[in-house]
Image 1 (spheres, one colour):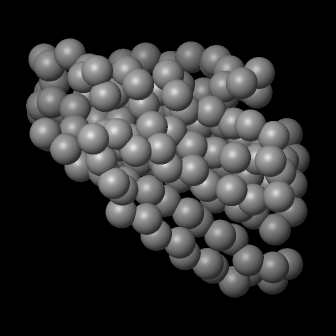
Image 2 (cartoon, rainbow, N blue to C red):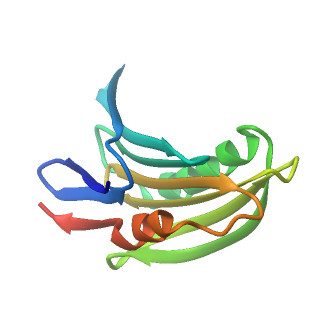
Length: 152
């Protein structure tokens, strides 16, 4: 079963095709100039994990803050269940600059693919994890192929 999961706000539609119905959550954190809203949809299937996430900040991120966010996201992924970075590239999603990372767990058991794009005050993330030594599934290829941004 495949299901499309989208997050919508007034500017963009952010989504991806997931292999099953996702668990969806939303969390709001008050900050001095408003609130940070985190929306997340995740699926676990056959030793694979799929996560799409949108973080909305109250104000647009400056170019310096955007670059710092890309770096902090990469470091967070490396520190979570310790992982080593095996690939890093600048790429695009629907014409928007993004960063794509591939990481491997320090024990060599798992591979994580992570792609982030930041537009204004919005941080979009696509995360896929699988067992090392197993090729990406057809569902994973569809997940990244259908991931994208559209005008709302």
